[in-house]
Image 1 (cartoon, rainbow, N blue to C red):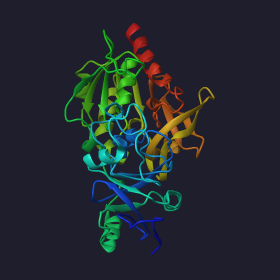
Image 2 (cartoon, one colour):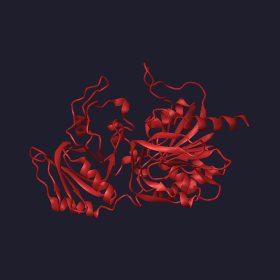
Image 3 (cartoon, rainbow, N blue to C red):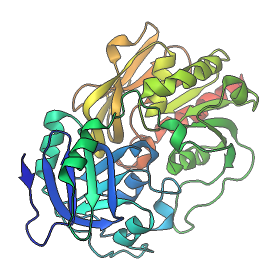
Amino acid sequence: MPVSHPSSDKPTALIALSDGQLFYGKGFGATGDTVAELVFNTAMTGYQEIMTDPSYAGQVVTFTFPHVGNVGVNLDDDETAEPVAAGMVVKWDPTEPSNWRATDDLVDWMTKKGRIGVGGVDTRRLTRAIRQQGAPHVAIAHDPEGRFDIEALVKKARTWKGLVGLDLAKEVTCAQSYHWDEMRWAWPEGYVKRKGDGLRVVAIDYGAKRNILRCLASAGCDVTVLPATATAEDVLALNPEGVFLSNGPGDPAATGEYAVPMIRGVLEKELPVFGICLGHQMLALALGAKTIKMNHGHHGANHPVKDLTTGKVEITSMNHGFTVDAQTLPVGVAETHVSLFDGSNCGIALEGRPVFSVQYHPEASPGPQDSYYLFDRFAQAMRERRGA
């Protein structure tokens, strides 16, 4: 049973992989143990946004960038009210915050939010393990006394059912509908409210990030958010001019059991439709394509994606473990974007209709503005429909 020990001090945290590999480290944040899928993220910034991204439900995130904690945390950068990722793994212990926007430090935040962190880990070796065997099932534990039931933790990792076939959108979606009018952050005002009439958009919340909703508002949309389980009748009753399908976690095929009928009902009304991440996969399923589980997925803020319609390359932010199988796209559905890392599908469009989606996150600003045109495209499609 391969074991990786921290360089010094008594280990107070343990990562147990389902194949029996053990990685010891120094725990921080909440104590106890949890089981999840282990992924790695290559972003150099945004650890708070990543931990509060609902798309990370059921996952522990290994950060390949070692400087985690250096900008602290604050209320403005949460993508949802509470952290959703099950835990984090970092190379170095989180540092003290050194940023004027910080209102708390990462360790205290993790403790208050009930999330386990593991520091002092050889994240390069751990990342290689993830790449070689696919995103593994793991159990992570934090005990200040360093007492671990290794056999029990490995068993938990091995018996966890995983994300395939698991619908997590119902667990992270909103409980009831609400209105959104906050726009993107801008200096020096910060977040301001959109005023006046806007384009009526219904956003389906499969685990929506706040900044996606802000981008819609900044594009001129009057946004009403509905739960993931909303029906076509629920959506159309609001008389929308466009429908947005949000990001989210879990197996798209499982969420599609109730999402696909709704989307097909909306498509019959020939409304503009725009999807991101899980919303992209939901749209693909509704149009007749299939999704598949990836080996270790795409998680990071440096992913090059080519727009096949313009030839331009965008630097994008990604977070997905499932992908649309481009070979299953039916006639009339065009592949519009592809990953330049592995050629996987990153965008589709329904030919002759203002219906499109992308696998990546245009709101996350990795470019930093490479992909904002997608929100404007959605808004323009609604304006043209209104004018017609």
